Image 1: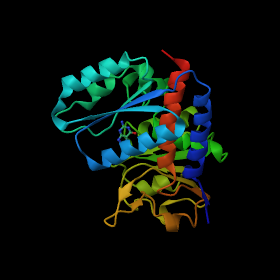
Image 2: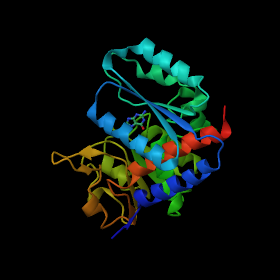
Image 3: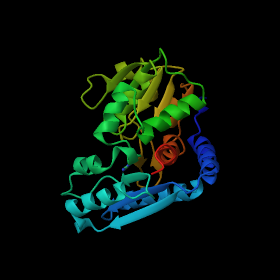
Image 4: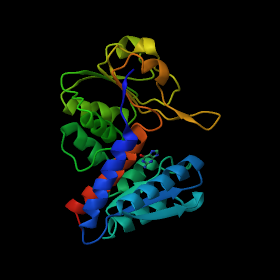
Length: 279
Ligand code: GUN
C-alpha cells in the first residue's frame, strides 16, 4: 500500500506558519478576490479562499460582480486595486462568463500582485527559473514532494495535461529541478506507454479514472491534480486511487492531496508579496 501524501496536514501547518509571520507584520497582507457572475463552483472556490485568508490573518477583499459588469469596468477595478497599498495580491476567479477576454484581464493585473502567476511575465519567469510568484497548483505539488523528501532530480517525470495553469508550468518547474520531463496530452498517441515510464506521474486532466493501475510503474510516485465531481456530490481525481495505491510508492488522495496545497500556496504568495513589496 502506497504512502499517502497528505496535503491537508501539510497545508494546515503552512497556514499556521503564515499566521505566525503575519502576526509580526505592521499591517496584514491583503488579497483581492474578484468573481464575476454566479457560477456555483467558482463561488465555492472563492468561499474557501476567504476561509484560508481568515485562518492566515490575511485580509480578504471580495468583489462579487454581476455577469453584465463588462470587460472595461472589470479592467478599471483591477487598475484601481493595482494602486491600492492595502492590496498585495489580486485574483480573478476563472472561468469568466462568456464575452470576457480573460487573457486581457490577467494581463491587467500588476505582476507585483500576480499571486495566481497567470500574467505573461510570471509565465515567462518560470521558463527562466526567475520569478516572483509560482502558479499555486504546481507550486503545491512541488511543496508536497519536498515535504516527503521526494527529489525530482534525475527522475523521469511524466505530466499528463498541458494546460497553461497546471501542466505546462508543472513540467517547467520539474525541469528546473533537473528532472527528465515528458508532457502528454489529449493528442498523445499511446498514453500508457509514456505513463508506465514515469518515476513521478502527475495527472492534471479532469477525466475520472484516466490513470488505471496497468498504466503505472510499480513504485512510482503518483500525483493526482484532477477534480471530478460525481453525481452523488463526492469528488474524485483522475487516478483510480484504490487500484493504483496498491502499486505506487506514494500517492495523493482526492480530496485532501493537491487541492489544499493549492490554496496554501495562494496564501504563501500573498504573504510573500506583502513581505517583498509592502507598498
Ligand atoms: N479557477 C479554478 N482554479 C483557479 C485558480 O487557481 N485561480 C483562478 N484565478 N481561478 C481558478
